[in-house]
Image (cartoon, rainbow over all chains, first blue to last red):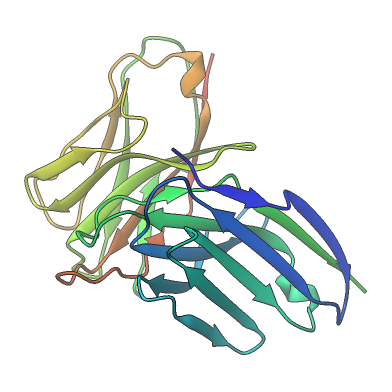
Length: 111
Length: 115
């Protein structure tokens, strides 16, 4: 079953913050975040593994709460280049084989 | 340049006419996978391969076949395409380490229309 992402879409002004949530009905081992710009392939952002860690680089970070089977992606002081569709992918085992992606969150950053 | 390539990039075909979408990676990755992308449904995994001659079904394998005879290639075969297979298809590859997930590198996508 696909994880559920929320919100489905969000519009921001440059410099504003956003949070994208990813929730699964299954126990999770890992959560992967990707960003896809219009007409392009998805591009990897980060992976979070079981252990409840938080990761980040630049102004994009993420958390993983394995007990709640949820992950959140935090975009701070958004830039125009952050626009795109964000996908979370969830893995339920450590075999590293199957990923199940959510339906995506469309983010638009305006000047 | 490290990359995943797919061919063709665009294809319009008719119901029932067999087709193959090729995927090739030059990064010596063990893991390869096919996804289809439809509006509102995100990326859904069709098939994946952990290594040569090892393939397994993803979430939506019906109507598709794959093979992995060489490490670098992972073609997607539609033996009798139907209109509900009209979609954007992505191939992806990843190095595989035991008990560790890795970043997947996606190809540019193939837009398929079945009439």
